[in-house]
Length: 371
Figure 1: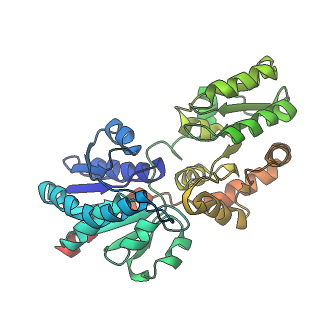
Figure 2: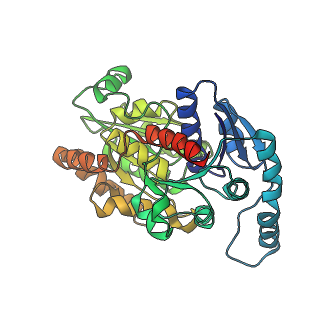
């Protein structure tokens, strides 16, 4: 099997693509898989690290304003499929799979026009522009949230599969994770992070939580990742508030063993990207979601809203009241084990445990049908 994956710009687009590629390779060890991205997106870091080759097309995201950059983006949107066709002819794939981001547009558009089987995966509750534009030409659209299908108007192409995850999540028990991390069974473990780069307002609210609630509290352990950009500022605040005197608080830049940390956690404070929510659902974790306000179309808020409406997670806004709201919410969850267990059960309802397998089997089906 020969496969071209495309999706980029953010980890939320790239990681599902890598998870699909890994699943194909696990089931068909001889499969030839390559990725197509831009020369600026995070795919340039993540894809080579995952062991796949990365090809490039020149394309930009369209903005909702009239500007020189937007004129260039529109020009590239029209001309980039021709470059993508050359890549497709050279690679000769059996199928082309896009996972969102504007780089998906030229690659999937060109492949569909060449009669090659095409599929998209939409991980968010509201589909992005590229997926909406491509819906009419692709053979299949895989959905993480069923709600996303309402805006695509092609029910015959939709398949609810959940979000493909890389290995580790839901594969380790809470007991095993706690034993490996040396966390007592009767300790309430609070895990918090604002993303790989960090988020200043999330860090400020979490440090306030540490100072006024979790710091020194018996039976509670709090582990927080500051992110790389915010590391020095957050560490300075941590020392200024004398939080380093509490043995039950730990600050780190990045969480390298996230599946294990999440498995051990009782309460998780984090952003609301589609991949993060899927990981929380797979692990069955009581979550406090703080959506980033700096995401296109307010996608994170819409993702979190779906869970909050089902009482499957707490939803907080990144505003002036965040510090107080976070303290009150976490205190309630730490002190109410029944509420935590109810949220754990409800968020598991959003998980599709065999998402990777479902996608792999349908990919094979699409290839057979098209031939």
